[in-house]
Length: 252
Length: 96
Image (cartoon, rainbow over all chains, first blue to last red; front, side, top):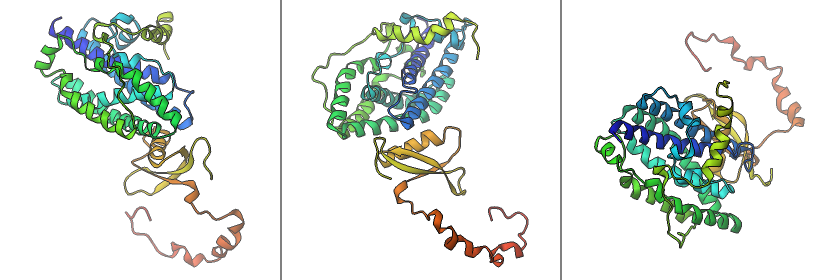
């Protein structure tokens, strides 16, 4: 991978995580626990899909092969997606959705802060704009973590169950490609190792308020950087890409 | 208003710009203050409506009742001298 290809791949990863997680959240639309939270989750989904849109435009430009953001979103297959494994996990219930979102928001919050000073000016500008959105997302999900964890016996049990299962996808958030080294050196990408302690601090503060304990099993999934995914992504893409692939000229 | 399965009812007031009064724009359900504030933000400021939000539990709002209309408001009907229509407002003065 030369530097431009590595750069394209890096932007694609950020875009894909936003696109896939935004799509997952949008599955709640019309099914939220009550009206206000239904709107809140849809708002977050729209923020994420908006960020994905901008990032995919940027990626398409970097690639320079005439593909558009729609081509990248709708015409790539599962193994060509680089979103985090966490982002593609199913909604299951509200606790799972909140834990998945919180872990991802906390990561994005610290990542975007660093990306604001990226040498890639487009990426830096997107990080400033996205950072404000993510700051709110994190505030929203952190409040829910505390509310569910400190709520009833049932809400706490569901939150802890989600925590135990989703924690196994957190190492994958930080995974880097070998080609990333050059991008980090060039001041374009962020070395994910440098945000790990800040992320963990945010996570531990919320865990304490939510009375959560770390799962006993610390085994971790991996593979998203090589396009290796859990079984759920294929189904998600099938639904997300169906319309565009069936009616390629469809406009709205 | 008592708590139902969706939490307490809260009244929402949005300030469109700094210096402007907060205007009542509706209500939301929420179980706590932070949730009420976030729900108000998510439901009522999606289209750039505001720069500040107040939320207050609906039960804390003290309201006059429809049968108070007579004794409360009718005595003001024939006191036109209370209207500031006898003064001229200098040009350029806003928000009077």
